[in-house]
Length: 371
Image (cartoon, rainbow, N blue to C red; front, side, top):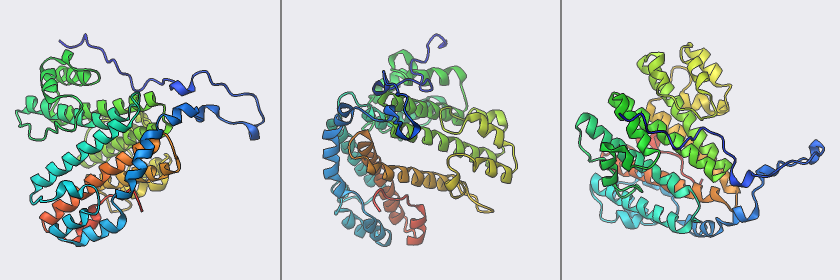
């Protein structure tokens, strides 16, 4: 029924960025040769000057390590008082339940994204890069409700760019949706997969769409973030599939093209014994951190541990980008740091509401952006 619709966005197709067109390297001795393609024109860097100036003024109100240390030891009410020292404290004032905490943090994130929208140049993809996650999330909730008859309580209408009613109509008629959301609905309705397989389809489209946006922006850092995110999604799928003993064909359907580690390589190591698999994966670009992320010896991480450790790896990438003074990179790193703060604060406050010990809380937390 839906086969006539074609994918309009191909994130895996290499396309030169606007900055790279027309550049050639002169024939020079190796010690004098410069990759001109890696140097952005001044006007390309300057277009983010306004946004960078605005985020630099906001960085002083980021969550600091000393805040995190005090939050771990505090009770719920004390934690709210500590958070008054940072920007999100105004949103959490008076919160006393898990629902109120979630609503306050959603309001805070909404305003962070509005700040981003106002600061960015009109032709930047960063706003879409951050917001598309919530559009894919909302589409996942609506498709799951259709396939399983579940509720829609998990919708996040304030954080997506596409109105939930538009997405709801699009689940019935994919032509009403823009790419790549149209293609998501088409694939799910054509294949009629199980709920876990439907989630895999949606996540694959999400990761590939961000890769497409990164290539459109022409930012090497954004591209590295997107490809690394794909690698970690594939490594997490590898970990889950081995734990559950999934067939190779089932596992293959969960993998996403476009990362630094080829899908064929991940499939090759899937059936190997544990030691052989780890030895082969250590030959990838993540060799220095792979044992920490995937676990060493008898200590195997849970999927939540894997998420935390892979997020820490990406946070290290973001901190490294602070060396770049002007451009898309510092703006991206700042907003990603804000998102990380929301994740940390939510974990902390939910742990307080459930009376978890400080030692247990500390093991759950991600690294903060500033150290």
